[in-house]
Image 1 (tube, rainbow, N blue to C red):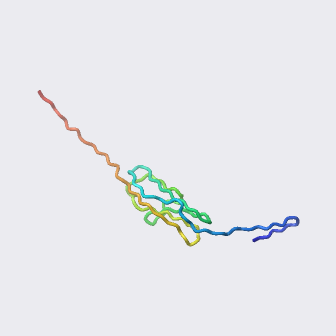
Image 2: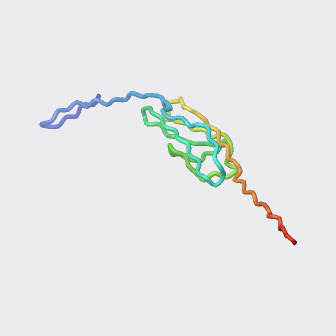
Image 3: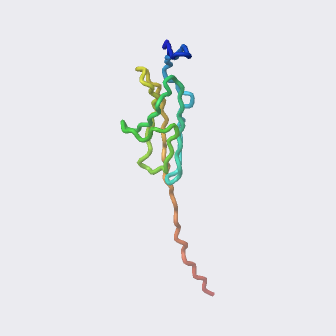
Length: 117
């Protein structure tokens, strides 16, 4: 509680310092996409202070946005982790697996057919 006083103004200020650990409200789900198409994961959290979202893959940060979206390549297959942290010594985590499928194109040689009479 803080009391501010001025000649004609007396005000009482209350500051609400309630903290709430992070909780995931949207968690990523496993996906399978064809290479060269867009893969998108979503992760949202609530808490107080407002949690910061971090996406990691193989221990490396790949994004700090709530939505992770990129054009998938074969080497992007793997587990993606979403972490929500607001500095309260509790981190909310969830993961999803991305399977990037080969974009296969098959070409067949058409045999030459000769008809003789």
